[in-house]
Length: 59
Image 1 (cartoon, rainbow, N blue to C red):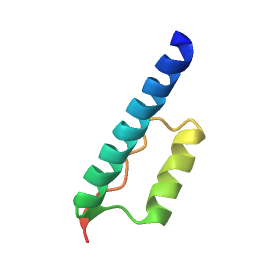
Image 2: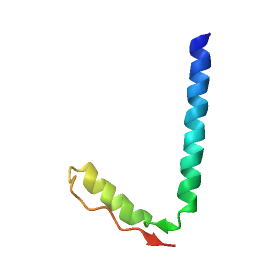
Image 3: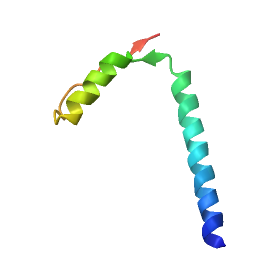
Image 4: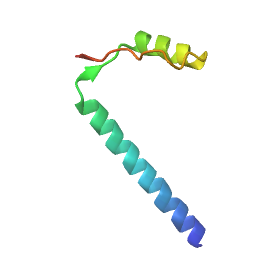
């Protein structure tokens, strides 16, 4: 079952990458308020691709 073994390896690698990304994000003390990020994402979703993303700020 080489395909199953590869799938398990891919899932483990994806899980490890996600854990590393979450740890890196949590270590960064800068943030964007949820409402500002939501507004920006909605603008982009409506086709306003040049919309400036909200600025990060220190916690």
